[in-house]
Image 1: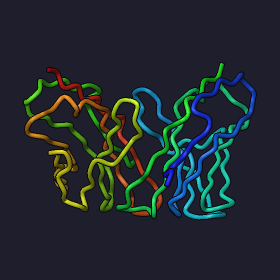
Image 2 (image 1 turned 45 degrees about the vertical axis):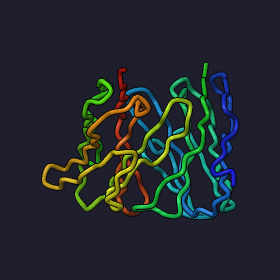
Image 3 (image 1 turned 90 degrees about the vertical axis):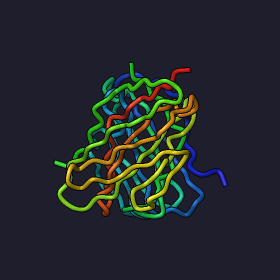
Length: 113
Length: 108
């Protein structure tokens, strides 16, 4: 049981490049989400999904796309990277929302130059 | 607006001293409240949640609806408690809101 996995662990992009951050979970969780963690700003919700085929925007969705074709996978796409997207990105999953515990991945540290 | 406020960026205490990490929230309904912890080089993980009314690693948190607070407390800090602590709120539907975090340093 690997839990929540994320790849890559580190990435450096040039401004304007695109890339996909991968997230997978093997716990059959319906709810998955992406956060970015910035100094002094805590974790901010980018996008979330309540099940395969269903996604919605969080607090800071601009510049990011997501899709959920399977229960297991929830990739985050950066369409045209900007220096403001330099951050640590965390994927999380849980059985549901409300009082359910969220399980986090190890994070991806992204630098955009 | 929904918000979680952790007023202290850094809290330093000596080993054996009491610890209180503050968390205040702004929410119009009845939220679920959590404390998450991130130890050095480890993943963010759940420490405790209000609904469970539990004590984990000696930590407790009491929900005060009148003051809209969910402060985290421990009577005697240990060096292994040094970590980043996040207070979080769930609106019961789809969204979680995290505070900005408090770094706890327990000094020997």
